[in-house]
Image (cartoon, helix red, strand yellow):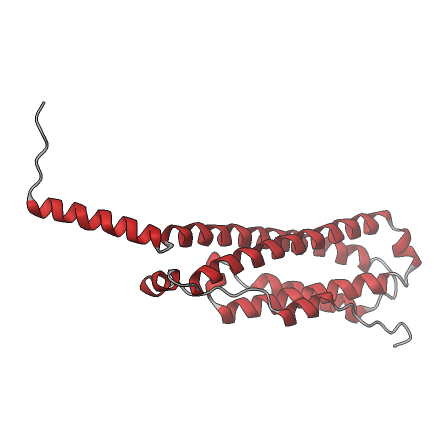
Amino acid sequence: MPVARFTRPRLAALLVAGTATVTLSGCGYNDFQRLDEQTKASWSEVLNQYQRRADLVPNIVATVKGEANFEQETLTKVVEARAKATSIQATPELVNNPEAFNKFQQAQGELSGALSRLLVVSENYPNLKANQGFQDLRVQLEGTENRITVARNRYIKAVQDYNVLTRSFPTNLTAMMFSYQTKPSFTVQNEAQIATPPVVDFNKK
C-alpha cells in the first residue's frame, strides 16, 4: 500500500488549519454558532405567536362591530395598531438592528395595549359577554398572549446567553475578530408598558 507523502507547504497548511480549528473551538467560535442559531429559533417562535395574534384580530373586530354603540375609538385603535404591527417586516436580521427592533417592540406593545383595552371595554356590553363566538375568540387571544410571554422569555434567555459569551473573556476576542455584536432584547420599559392594564372610563362620552 502506497504511503501518503506530504510536501512541506501542504504540511504547513494542514498544521495551520488544525491550529486554527483548535484555537477557534477553544475561543468559543462553535458556541457563537450554536447560540446564534438558538437565538434565531427563539425569535422565530416569538414571530409565530405575534402572527397568531394578528390573525385573530380581524375576527375579533368583526364580532365587536356587531355590537351597537360599541366605543368606536377603542375599535379604531385596535385596527390601527394591528396595521402598524404587521407593516414591519420582521426578518431574522431584525434582531441585529437595535433601532428596528425597538420600533417592532413599540408596535407590538401598542397592539397589546389596544387589545387589552378592547377586552376591558367589552365587559360593559352584556350582549358581547353573552356572545359565545366572542368569548371563544377571547379565550384564544388570552392563550396566545400567554404563548407570546413564554416565547419572549425564551428569546430573552437566548439573547442573554449570546451576549454573555460576546462580552466574556476570552470569547470577546473571538467576537471582535468576527465582528459579532450583542443582540437587542426586550427592554424593561417595554415590559412595563405591556404589563400595565389600561385605564378605562365608562362615563366618558
